[in-house]
Length: 334
Image (cartoon, rainbow, N blue to C red; front, side, top):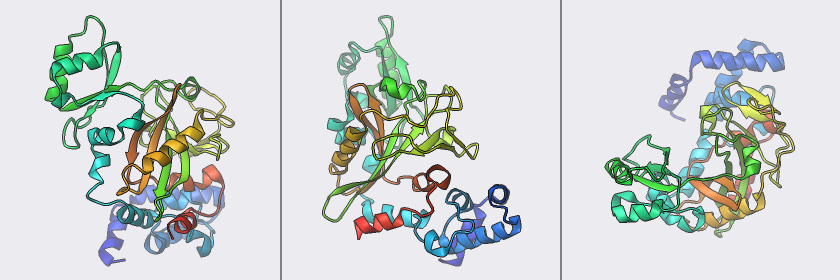
């Protein structure tokens, strides 16, 4: 690692947050804070593991042979760069192109309003009471993701002009399975399934994460305060859920109080098969985290992420495991 890279790691590391994480590690380990800070700094330089991951991966007191089993930022980046052709990554970043490529697996109708007539838009709206909007390309409509309600009094021409002006496309709203509504009815509680293609073009499911919204906001992502856990092989919640926001685990939903342990995602086997099928559609992108929504009719793809989160499935406070996923990736990818 270059000196510039070393300084960059510390420059972007908040000293205050690093100290807070060290205090948290001290709380459950009893190790002196100064010793923990020293070990954190060593991990940043040697193991390329940040101070938050040091806490999540429970590196305190962990022997080097076990630390070496963890997928860290650099290893995840190497998977991303090696397995995902840079000329094709935009196909996943551009939501419309993604829909067009994976149209047969989306499980919902969509329309490119920018390149469609008003009559096409009217036809799309027929029989619908709402739809969802997304940017038509990665350079337009930034931040415009919303549901639009329509009824007999709606001015469809005005809506059409708005969509066209902001370069948005539309798709059917996802209505999730009643069982998934038990987790949180306000958000689509997606299952993140990460797959890799081996050298023989065989897709492998590396792990599945259940994400759960914790408020009345229509999002389940961790950055917005959502919680997550690693699902068992049959799609059950057997581990506690984790919140990056509160740095805490939950066995009951923080909003509703629902018991989370024992919950089973419906159509889980079908969701895994859907992701393996999707992994074969564009073989230039071989490392993907698929966000899957579960509807009453089965699983549907929400989107694909060519850089899947590596920290969540290795979170010690979720799984209680003392080793990471790197050996499994290396076994499959040789």
